[in-house]
Image (cartoon, rainbow, N blue to C red; front, side, top):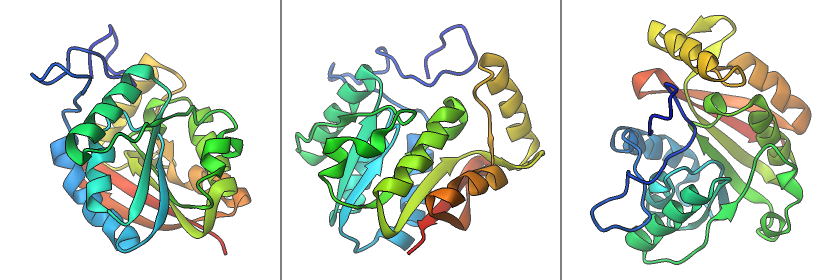
Length: 226
């Protein structure tokens, strides 16, 4: 992500466009992350139908790749930032030849009552990649609250990124990363898996699986209790 005077930022900015000169932005980690994420999600989403809501889709590279990987699903990408929404739209047009417009969504608000989301019917799944650690806690909490309202019975929430378990980190690199994030913004930081599980439980969500991913990341899988 672009340097804005801090070590980390939750936003991508122009200057990361490709040579075509359109609105596409780039994440440097996309090529590394996308294949193992798709392989893990396939265990749950292959052959499924319905709508998957992606929260915090960023550049839109992953959203377009996921839509290609899971053609039986409607992949609805969302983000709160206008430059991200433009990039998401541009990547979808480029890779899918599809002009579906992404949804402007701030997960910290009461998005579960949004008419456009409710019109999709109960959601098959919700995916958020590299969101929980680089956004205020209200975003993660709002994501789980909304999931409890909008997921179909048996639906899944997939959270991808770096996490910790209590005061223990998965590698010293993640410990340093957490320190740096909190120095940039006290509302950021690696989230505690046990705390996430406790917050999710009152909203009908149970932690079902934790998958190891490259670079000490994980995918946490929460299921909507029937």
